[in-house]
Picture 1 (tube, rainbow, N blue to C red):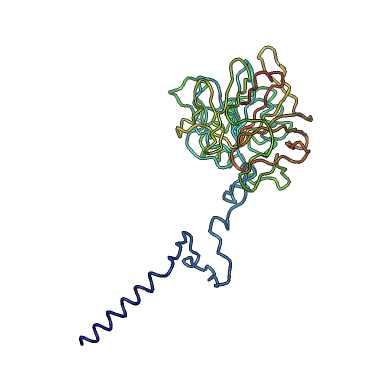
Picture 2: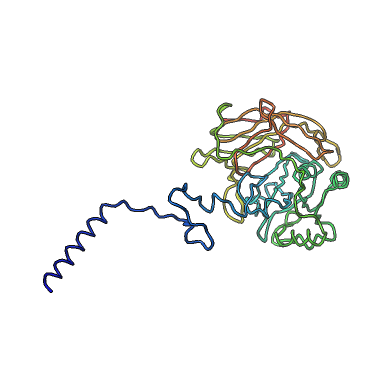
Length: 363
């Protein structure tokens, strides 16, 4: 018995020494062997891709170039008009937008249009009235246009282009929007995701994207630094007017541009987070007054071309653009005349007045 115990002890020590000499196998966070119905890898096969790399049930977003649920990628976005005066700042729910437009309206103020591909939340806004050029921008994306109020020029453009819209002043208004009585009107109209989709359902609007939709730009497969261009690694200031002069500061750590306005960070009140964008596109346009009584503005965007800047990862490069409103197409091009390629992520687009170039400062 004693010899047998000694023999067993020696065998145990030998096994322990052998095990210590082996390298530890890496732990796979997504081990396909543990998934029901997953194929068993052979010893000679290349490493199995992770679930994220497979992107099963996903598709590349046409708005951000990022992988999203395929149902979201193929769904029509919602373009929502956003109030942007100091009294309405900060807004709620806008940080969720994939693309943010900004353009001058009457009195030198700007209005914003947030394009959502996956809108959520119970409070988004405040929502304000439509201007005809925003109708045209929304149509470029096959978006459903949401607004609370309008000008006669906007209603004419909606009819001319056949844009599906959710108007707060129509019969569907009380379904889509509500008033926050703690805020002074007319700055207290808000939308909810539930209301928006309920309104779309009631009006019977198509919810899938047109198959022939052409993108404004294409995306790099992964984050890419620009090899040339002027420095834009500190601050980008856009003096739309004496009233509105937002600016962006660049953070080299996360390679994002953070937005400021009205003497402070531009915050989404719903999340407490500052608005940040991967890409900035400055589209130079010619503005003029079409209604002197009300100060309504217009711009040359129906069938025209222009210049601009693309800014990302601390660099700014010259671009061109052309728009054909009749065919619902708008494209950006690089210096070689090829469709512009941008980085995956959120994009801010400024319709910047070409007569205020002195107010555009890139550092």
